[in-house]
Image 1 (cartoon, rainbow, N blue to C red):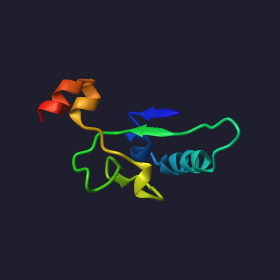
Image 2: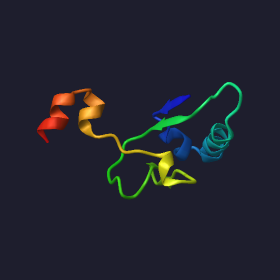
Image 3: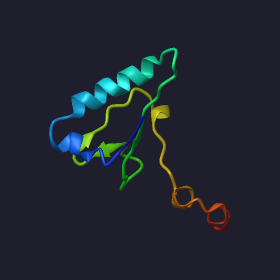
Length: 81
């Protein structure tokens, strides 16, 4: 599952729903479902946040910061940097 524009979950008290979805994805299952949360990041050292709410992660390996070259799909930009 890919979630984007999920800030409404933080704004309207839905972080518990997000947590349950994350817990289900962590447990896995025979169908191998996962969860991706796409959110803007102003400071990659602070970890994932939605508005003012911190997104709960169990391990640093559960999130990555995507650079601009990846977002715009321009491999040449990454080499020039």
